[in-house]
Amino acid sequence: MNSGYIKKQNLNFLIDNTNNILKWAFKKYPGKIFGTTAFGANGIVLLDLVNKIDKKVPFYFINTGYHFRETLDVLEHYKKNGFNIIGVTSNVDDSNHLLVDMGPDVCCSINKVEPMRKILQENKGNLWIAAVSRGQSSTRRNFRFLEPQDNNIIKICPMLVWKEDEIWSYINENKLVYNKLYDKGYKSIGCEPCTTKVEDGEDSRAGRWRGSNKEECGLQTEFGK
Image (cartoon, rainbow, N blue to C red; front, side, top):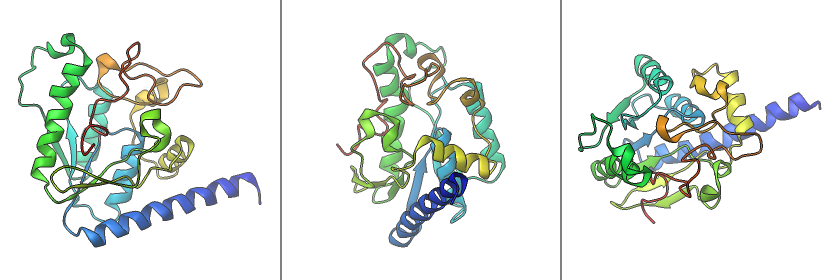
């Protein structure tokens, strides 16, 4: 067996494993599955995998008002191509973009965490599907496939064991539209004021809130802990 065949087969095994997790989720929670996405590389792979099973599953996109234009372009692509994307914003008026000057903890809490709290409140008893993987950062290495949340919600992470090269192999083989900032040195793309390029050897989220001790906005770590 040559290396190309082995790489391809490993990806097929990984896809099969993820699909088995998704099939379990759809059988256990029929009509009660929702997802969240910021249209990162992981996110568009999960969108594609879920869409192949059920095109009606809603995926919430939290629009903070600070996203890159490139991110919004990807959002529009998937909306126009039949994906069930629901935009959510904070109840706080930040049209003058003053929150970012109050620091990332305050800005993330108001523009990301509170909208997420609203999403979870509206989905009591449902299954929240997320595209996180353990290799993204040290804060995610102990994540499990199933995690209990508030409001009797279970979070499922079917892509926990995907590695970065496997994600990109899937994107390229399936010709998925992705955020072009990845081609410019970004590896994890959040809000424009708090996202920088990543250097060789850094983990994929090293470019988020660079220069601070902050590693997470709270969307994947605050709830159900």
